[in-house]
Length: 505
Image (cartoon, rainbow, N blue to C red; front, side, top):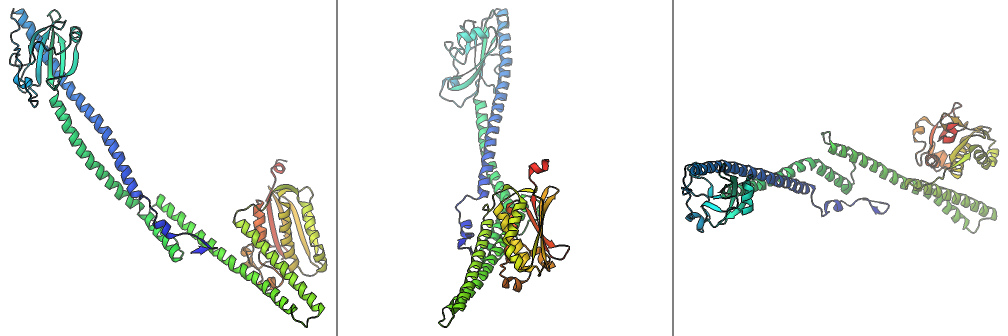
């Protein structure tokens, strides 16, 4: 469907746009957010689990270290030498079998090297780092350095290092009553690492499943939420494709989608009204232009006849000139209304005294009024000031006075008053004619509306005079109304805002 040669809307443009569906974008976004939350949560969870397991292992090492220290102290007090430690490297630590994570320490008390214990090595050192006893590693291999040994003689030292390719946690503590000797005991971290890896795999699988479920849920929810929008889009496409106007189906839900449906329905209604008005405007404008052009054509054709007298030719030319002026006047009116529709500025406001403008307007019609024995009664104080466009106000008065003169009886008077009322400047033009028909008053300012179709057309009225008055008045921030005055004649009332500096006084 086209208007004025331009496409209003192309439905294929709506349907064929190469864009990513909102449902897919929401599903991807929801899945991404879920994945980020899961990753952050998993990292924090694994950190806590690792911290908890290592804390438990450190607690175990403290207990075993205390027992080991008590055992060494007891042996020293009984005069025994520290022969309870075997200095041979256990095969499972010295071999390439990295699957073994625990060893038995038969040379240690059972309470220290219990079955299934993670203890892998132990040493008794002097505070200077000299090995006194060793198990699980050769005596030449220090589990901790000399500086760490000296520190352990003062306070507990915890360190992690690889022992035969196995990550091992070492705890070094001072042995009470030993003169500064240090007990070092190590436990493999492989079990902890294996548990963490298992949890990571489980979290990864669970996370993938949860992200997929989140994406599907987001897809389904967004699809359900956007279903009314898709339906509205289809309805709009049908309206513009088939040219059958109608309102959209409004969802029963009281949410944003329902509000959108109401707004679009109202927009379509206004668009339909606008297109209907424009079509009617074009139709009526064409009809209004055709009538004087047809008359002008007929008069020119008659003037071409060879038997016309000079007087007849002059009369035909005068009629043709009058019709030409009418066409020009109608074209100017149509142009003014078109500019108004486009939102163009048709008035430049200036602070003016109203009385001189009204006086000049009545002077313009003085000769015509004299021919009809109609008088103008102007009642406007010279102090009345308003912000108006003088040329626009004179055109308003020309339309109103012209209408009043056409409908005023012989010897009547046209009253023009202007005064301050409340916070407005009120201008009233009232004649003593037959007035507006009651059913015409609501349509008085519509384009091409006439109170009496045949009479107004015969008198040269185009039905645009009051429509132009309304456009000009509104361009000057005013309001205009039509009614019948106390005498029964037509009355047009215009209200302009009072200037601020007048309000202050």
